[in-house]
Image 1 (spheres, rainbow over the protein chains, first blue to last red):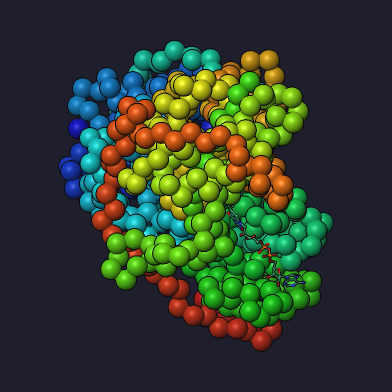
Image 2 (tube, helix red, strand yellow):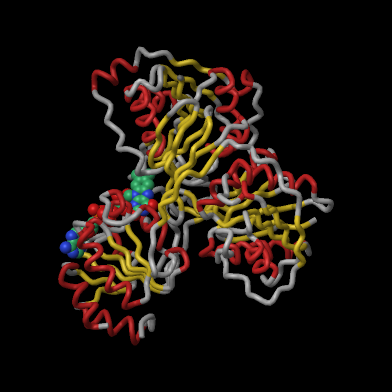
Length: 317
Length: 250
Ligand SMILES: Cc1cc2nc3c(=O)[nH]c(=O)nc-3n(C[C@H](O)[C@H](O)[C@H](O)COP(=O)(O)OP(=O)(O)OC[C@H]3O[C@@H](n4cnc5c(N)ncnc54)[C@H](O)[C@@H]3O)c2cc1C
């Protein structure tokens, strides 16, 4: 029996979230004494597979290379994962993926096809069948136990360290499945930025409705982010108002982050926002309302008008 | 075409839930319940498709306890034509709900099922994808724009790096994200009208679905609290703390 980790990648490179997934798999694998395999499904994804072989703890990298896996559409991908599970001689006890938009999109489909539950966004492994996951926007942590033969799991990258390099896994090309032809990618509008990726950034500068306009958001926060080498983030209100693109949203229904430093500017601290950032190591809040709930989680709170405080902060760094 | 809109009754998003002292779950006694906000967005989208002449009938479905009737009445007050309640007192998990919805979908034969991407109670984000899998239909999750064409849907999705647009064949499952639309409020006359709209009540057994939970909750605990921080007097003090106490900036 082995554990299968689904690689997160863009055909050219392996995404860091895969390394966190391997660590979660290793925590389970250590209890079972089982191997960890990584599945790379993509188009011209040889480089990704190579990279995956070097992750410490991985013994085998299964590669399904075909044009119809290039866009990671859930229908083709889920069918492939199920075929991999069904055809594997030793069988798989667990299937894991990071809770990225791809992981969240595909894994429940896999679980349903296997007729098993999915355990979403685990933050800790208690035992081979028992896991901790936040519920109610992180207001509670549930410990759940699965009775299914195969455990299908997504995990929060922020809760598991990245697996290190130094592995030497074997590559196995596996048979590709058919193109189901149910979904076709017809366009992509990716947010271009030279700044670090939000989910993996060490420092995040996040802005909320208090910035009052998209222009202010950019004018005030971008220089600060650049000075700190930070990623930009936003509250839902800032995204809804068009100050920032959708993929900047931090929170219960956006991205979960845990940087070394999170600076919340003009963000009130609604529970849905806190759900996405309260595990940050150091939280700074700048808000003119001394009673804003964000101050309850902030290590350093500054009650001030952001239009004065942010330029001053930039000048002082 | 028919649109099926699954809706879930959840704790209102403004409520801060408390963990029960015995760690068996969260305290839901006398707590305000509402329709899951993402499902409100789904009902709204279905109504817009009906108003645009794309859909002919909108059917709301809910699975759960008797009180889910209220959630269905809300959906009908927003505009759904009729509703189905799959009634049970058993704790329903996403796989069971997906199976129940698949059984309803087989009877109703909708061309589109549109539902919230996640419920704000269990935060599972599974049901739509599972439903699509069980029906063998394509899916477009986390939708911020939906256009229905000839036998297909063009859906813009909110993904990690930005937006992507998929073309999927119908019938299909779409799950909603926050930016899809801003749901309308039900007006008083429509709330009155909704009371007279048909609601069918079925039991899981009549649909031939085994809803037994696959996961057991061992315990529910409060998350660790962050220790209280301090307020700094000015920007200079903030920079000093970040540099010399927290050591997070150079
Ligand atoms: C289903 C659902 C899902 C949600 N998911 C998320 C999510 O994932 N992420 C998320 O963030 N939210 C989410 N929300 C929304 C959440 O409930 C809040 O509405 C949102 O986080 C508020 O954003 P905000 O703090 O920017 O705005 P507000 O709450 O309006 O706060 C603005 C703050 O700016 C301060 N301010 C104003 N002017 C100034 C100034 N000049 N100087 C300094 N401070 C100033 C104000 O004092 C205030 O505290 C969700 C809501 C629902 C219903």
